[in-house]
Length: 161
Image (cartoon, rainbow, N blue to C red; front, side, top):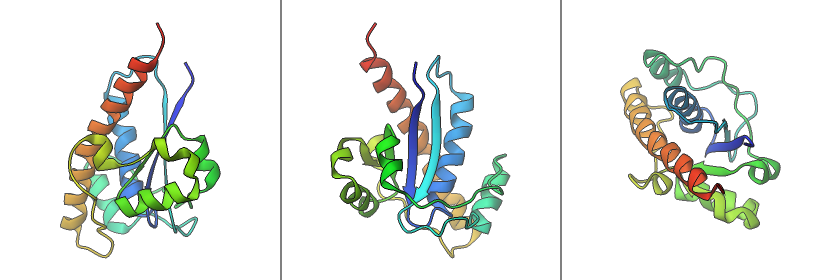
């Protein structure tokens, strides 16, 4: 079965989307995905390529046993959008930005909350205290787990026997 690609998107790719991707990788390791291989990536709509993850994002994920120290921000490109099977944005604004970049890919671009079937836009913790990042990471973790379960369900359902 072909490997599927999921990209998490926020603004700068130093907080929310980088945490979402790291959490998704951790969750996938714990899930039984069968033969389905999923590549996880993250990017920002206005990211400065090469920027590290925010210090508090690194701290919070480290306390959860996840290493984000090696993260390097990426700017979302049209090729990224076209090559992905699913794009999950942190806010409705991000979804609109990505859809306007590649309108023909609209059907695979969702906010994380809408795809997970719960929650609302994920507020940007940038510049916030560690507790703000911790709350954001917990919210993202819950929605990412739900979104990955939904993605795997849809993939299995759409697969011919």
